[in-house]
Image (cartoon, rainbow, N blue to C red; front, side, top):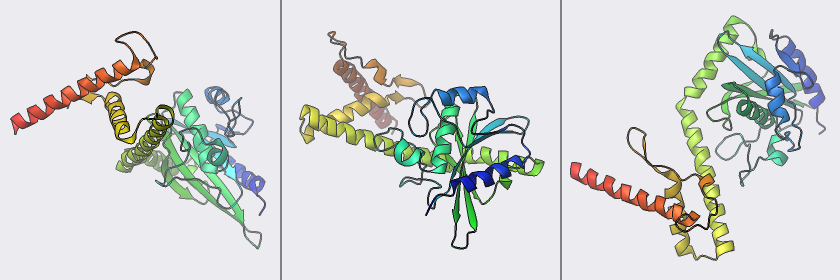
Length: 296
């Protein structure tokens, strides 16, 4: 069935103009030069140079806080959002590259989330909303609309947090009641324990992908046998994790990838840096175990 995105856009634009907000902009207009600049300096949702523009942008505020809102339209069944197996919005592929081809450009929520993420990384906004709108036409010609809204924040701009599902834009009205409810919900979602759970799920998936890639590279490039690979992976993790005490102070600082420069200087090679971190990690672990046994 042919896309009705043009119809969806006309409907959405009209509804947005009736919400009561002054700072609104269609694709070729501007709500904030800072947003324009940061979107210009990032690839478009197709991955091309020169940036891209959301279908609609607006800024909402409650007197204390301003939140940019990025809206993307689609007009085909099933094109509202793409989620992974952990029910998280897909922004990157299995290789941890931005998935322009099959997610960001193809789905309304994913595209809006990509623009919101870039805006947060390049401006001073603490939060942003990403809204995907999809419309479909039934056999009688009637159009039904589905809307999903997510919150993204500076703390973790690549983790959209689900705010709600809607059939119209009334939740964005510039009225005291709707505005207060919306801003409170935006705050509540970010304090929900589910956010921590989602972040852990997402980070676990990233770690698993990186370890799989590392294992494959060790096999392909170094021909290291499986029984020895686990030692390399374990040592790399020890060096990268570091050790903190109960107060959060670093006893063994993490080895930052930027410290691995490929130096051939004796005592300062990448391998020696990693071994030093592993040795310190293990020594600290022995001390901690000894102290625990003494206290017991």
